[in-house]
Image (cartoon, rainbow, N blue to C red; front, side, top):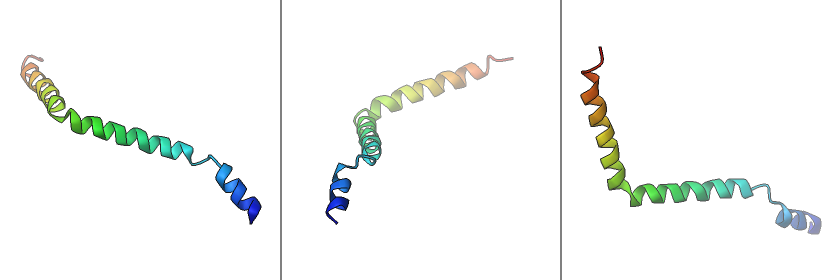
Length: 57
């Protein structure tokens, strides 16, 4: 039992999962903070796309 606990506390195989989860949390936080600016940029891009589609032959 003692060896199992030593190995369990020294095992770092789950660290990759924790890092990925932290990165996702940070990205979600940034999206929430800059939500209005992101919406403005996306709306502008779609307006440009729709206005240019009539010019394509």
